[in-house]
Image (cartoon, rainbow, N blue to C red):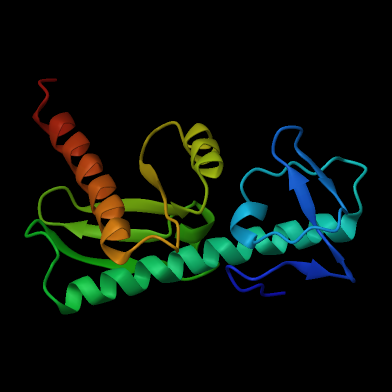
Length: 176
């Protein structure tokens, strides 16, 4: 199920709404947009499994769209020669590959430290969860909102790659 960003969510004849304060979902007759809908929703355990599946599909769709958006931004930056001099290139990992299962969405190849791994997340909560699950710091999580302008997204991702590169350079320069 693909739901366009910014459109009203309507499923099975009723509209889904939620309250951020109490983290619950209700069937009130209100119209909300997807941007408001996916902020922070916790579905109760006894909730209708069809609704839980809808939330899962929405989350996967947002993640895929965020990754495609980053890919478009970097394709454009590469064609306009806006990549930093220390960055040789980048590649998006193929879906269901070994690296994708480890959480790597993009690999940026640098001149001096080798590959830098980046994971794209569509929410801050998921980024924090990812950082907790990968405490070694080898993969950096970046929160990307597809409604942000391309230069903002470019700055977020390049900033994360630069911070990871600086971390690796400082580890290399540190005395043993």
